[in-house]
Amino acid sequence: MAAGRDPYIYQAAANLGKSYEEIAQAVKADETWAKDARQLAKAQVLGCGFGMGWSKFQLTAHDVYRLKLGDKQSREAVANYREANAAVPELWKAYEQAALSAVETPGCVFRAGRCRFNYRDGFLWVQLPSGRSLAYATPQVSWRMRDFEVVETLIDDFGKEIKMSRTETRGPFKTLEFYAVNSKTKKWGLERTWGGS
Image 1 (tube, rainbow, N blue to C red):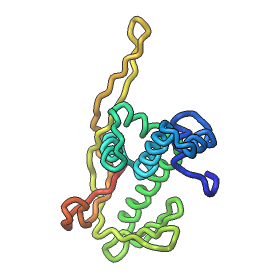
Image 2 (cartoon, helix red, strand yellow):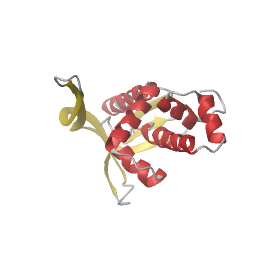
Image 3 (spheres, one colour):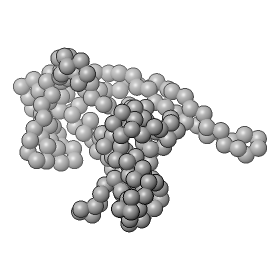
């Protein structure tokens, strides 16, 4: 992305198959469709950029941005973000693996992206590119099952597409747990990283 450009307009352009300039001009001209497209893109960048699945995205888009999205729209928004920003989910996986490796191998430093992960003195330390560090208390590796939505497209005898979705439970998968203050209850307890579900 070019410096000084609006990341939400980039995402809106990707969603609509239009150019950045076309969306930017329409936003500047205060066109409702363009402002709505930018607002959806803002929800995508700030939510999906941190790993939200479609159901959490749907709730957050409504609660924070006042966007009323159906299930299909929410699924498409997440899929569009991940397609337009394919490197982001790959980075999540690299971060998760580095964090797990650090906890499993105390004293060793693991790198992912521009961050460094290591476990020492009862904390998982994540050094950010700025040099600032995040600390996760008493981390541990655990195993859990994950639910995945599977969407299949079938074609009937008349050539019409029929989409069927179901939830499958897969695993077990490694996940990272640590102690922190729960953002809802405001109490100290065991928390779990996102872990790609």
